[in-house]
Length: 118
Image (cartoon, rainbow, N blue to C red):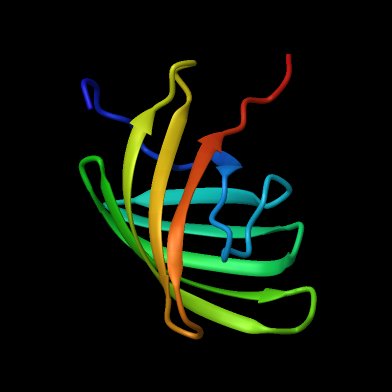
C-alpha cells in the first residue's frame, strides 16, 4: 500500500464482493469506530439482523472477531484477518479473509467506504 489509511473512526462501509458461504451482502452496512488501535463496528442489513466486530489494527493490518445473528435466528461468529487499502476511487477498502468458528468454512469479502451523497 503506497499511502497510509487514516482512522476508520466514523467510516461507513458495505460489501462489494462477498464469499459464497458468507452472511453479509451489499445491503449490510458497517459503522466503524477506532481509538488507539482498537477497531469496533456494528453492522446490520440484508440477512444480518445485528452484528458486531472487535479487533486490533496495526498499520494497514486489521484482525478481529465477529458475532452476528441472522434473520433466521442463527447466531454465528468467527475471526478475520484484513488488509486496509484505497480503492481506485480513493475510497477506503478492507479485504477480509474470514474463518467461521461456529460452522465450517471461510472465505473472502471486500468492504468499501460509502460516501454520503452531496
